[in-house]
Length: 143
Picture 1 (tube, helix red, strand yellow):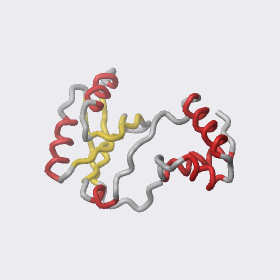
Picture 2 (cartoon, helix red, strand yellow):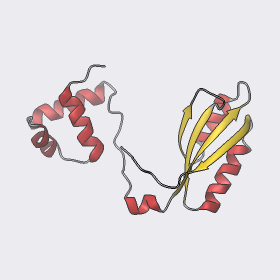
Picture 3 (cartoon, rainbow, N blue to C red):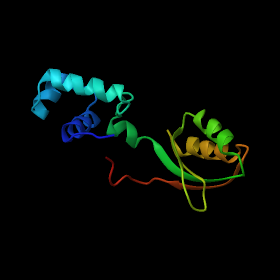
Picture 4 (cartoon, rainbow, N blue to C red):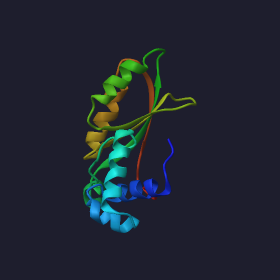
């Protein structure tokens, strides 16, 4: 998909604050409000923008415990495991990867004990052969 520099700038602004009014977006981009509205509608129609989300406060996020869990799967277990992981609210992201592990799962929980239960639950999913967990101590860069 070909995006203009203005489209990329618009997406960057929305990434900072998805609730920014169209008039403010237009002023920051040096475009008319009508032009910005038309670009937003086109980006939504073309599937570039598929929704708008919530950015949590730093204070709230600091209270969460995160971990990256590397998962090795049994043969042909990917659809079932993916379905089970998707049903777990603590699972935030699942990446299919190359290498000695099949998935990288990023999870978050309100405490270490809750995180421990999530990790144990992932290990008991049928088709999961092995897991390796790394608890996130701090985030140095997040864009």
